[in-house]
Image (tube, rainbow, N blue to C red; front, top):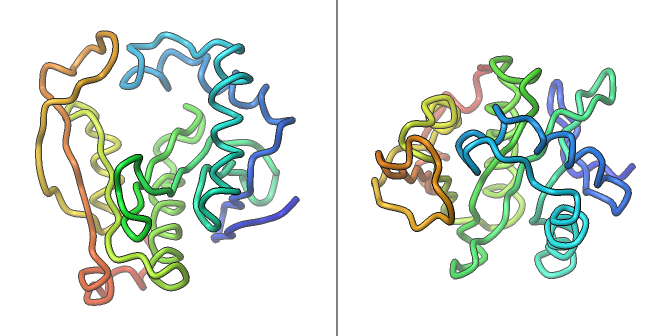
Length: 192
């Protein structure tokens, strides 16, 4: 296993073609998919034909960026994933941070721990200038992760998301942190 990043409790590694079942299981939980698809699972066909190939392609196109399988360090249990990669129309030094974790991993600080580590890696190793993240405004748990990761609310907006997701009437929010803000924030050095 090629480890991309290690934290106190997590190992982040590249996905492989053999990881489809992990993604199918993750996306089959209506609670996990609540703010993404309104609880509708992602089909195996979409995961095997679209999502997983796209995950794997990021490693080739954007070295150091992509989607990372999150494993619990002591047990090797799959917890979900993080992404840290440029958005479709964004410069490479302004990646987007995202995460999707199994319900069993919620409320344990894993999302914050992984997010903080990816932000730090971006600023210290990849020359990142700004990291952004977005969520539905109603997704208070995800917003709290962004705040605990040192990001600040920069805008609210109306998204053009396919389908209908409960809570989308409240719109979306974008959080961000710049390299200067990160360097000036000494709380990043304290455990959460």
